[in-house]
Length: 493
Image 1 (cartoon, rainbow, N blue to C red):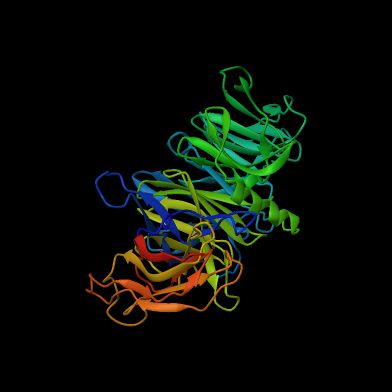
Image 2 (tube, helix red, strand yellow):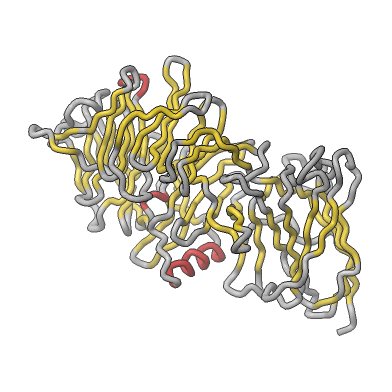
């Protein structure tokens, strides 16, 4: 029979006896035709190949790409330095910036109108002029003081800078971020008592997230300050991690917090937050907090590949990464496998830029930028990608089940010519106590190169009442899992 739920997301409930499903370094794709025997498959998440290095182990804290004069330019903040990366992966030092540990830097640009990139880093603002390659710190007011800016954005010719210490939104000169900013051109939060923590511009709206409530502003065309709150767009949900807010298509997602509690992931539906996290994910995030691991340092990046829009939410302190796929509404996990610890650590890519027709991502553990692609099969840092799928429970009214054969239908015959992957292997193990403890690993070949009819089959699998199977692979090939079949007979008790 078809293995029920073999293709599915990550969902580990409070009780693993109820649900213990995991999907790590695979994602679900729903087929868009109705006449195939299966409608959902598991496809491999992308691998990484080194594209640029910077001679430091400091983290890559932010990336951005602009297109000017028909040419892509790509920038990265690594530690306390702004770099430009050329199409060959050569890193060019463009100047020093303030730093605050691993806190992300932000980028925005007014390329067509002003030839500038606005960078915030370490609580300060900087303007990089594209035509002169000059980096200068932003000054504000008649005394030319240093602008306090924790995050930046751009809308309608103006750079926007958020000072979360004073809950203040500052405004640049029109189409000129390099000029001294007018200290009288600002707005402070008055609609809510909780301070602004984060800013995102999406669909020409300014989302200003507070600790417990949020509001949305727009260009009202007023003078002297042109922006104002949208009447009625006050949201009784704030943000738990300032760097978790990100544009996803033409909307916004964030890790929420309110007076009632925290750790729900929201996606804006108009000006109404729509819950997209699951109870299992919310329980996992709250577990991090109960164990004393902060979630306020969570960082989001987004990217689109093969029509899937991914919201990647990394938790550096908790050392885990969760990913939401907007095309399916399902969550999966990504992780960098530690062979020494025999566990997944958080996925190392943490910021993204699409430049030179490549997905470029920055490593939050070392000063490395990678090219990320579904055609690459090693992980950030050069190690293998360990992919794992843990199935739903097989339980029929707690009767004894005899498992005769498990066959995983996959795209076979994709082995390499030589080396690891020349005879790719798939591993299965199982738990007969509802995913509490696990048995031995059992390996079979998934087909050498050209063996397209090879079958991954495990036989004589014993008996149990509440079994969970786990499949994992590490060979550097495109592991595409279509479905699974299992032969089972029921006992009498």
